[in-house]
Amino acid sequence: MYSAAIFDMDGTILDTLDDLRAAINYALEQTGHRHNYSNDIVRRFFGSGVTVAIQRALATESGFDLDRLEDIGDPDVTMKHPLPWNDEEVARIQSIYKPYYDSHCDIHTGPYKGINEMIASLKKAGVKTAVVSNKPDSAVQSLCNVHFNGIFDFALGEKEGIRRKPAPDMVETCIKALEVHPEDCVYIGDSEVDIATAKSSNIPCISVDWGFRSHDYLTSRSADCIAATADEVATFILE
Image (cartoon, rainbow, N blue to C red; front, side):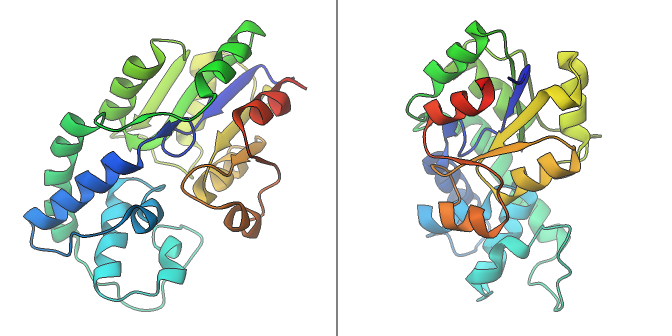
């Protein structure tokens, strides 16, 4: 049994996709870009933070190969051709996205089936629980308070001065706050970023296939363990 379980947020414990889609389409519309992206496309924008999500949207607008979309923002992938954005434009879109999303992050968002019960069972068994997400920290704190009512022992989103996932910094900060040993921790997430985060942090990863990436995609990214339900996650953690 693990003594601490660290969860990703988007696509793992919360279904945030509708609100993410509305926010990024709004920001793109306000800045004169294509803004009719569906959930199936938007789910592939997110996972590596807002900046990368916007870069992926601009790349898609320019006709970038969708099969390689997740390569954008992957620190292990070197892009061979100039990419269709500049930092100033990304920052301009982001300046509209962030305040809009902060005030509209909980319109359609809610926990996936069985999540609250699963976390409660972990807490009952004495497992410490936390959230580490590339989502802006303000949204992470707000959504944790609304949907989980303080049940997590620690929560951290993207903020200035801490490298975002898949760098180990956020997980290391979390482990220190929880006062546990890395070998007693497990990371749970729905994307290739989460697999890489666990690897860089030297802790095991449980992938979930109900989120922003499919079971087949997670398998292609060398997921060690894939859960199909919240009950399966609890079983993996407690066994």
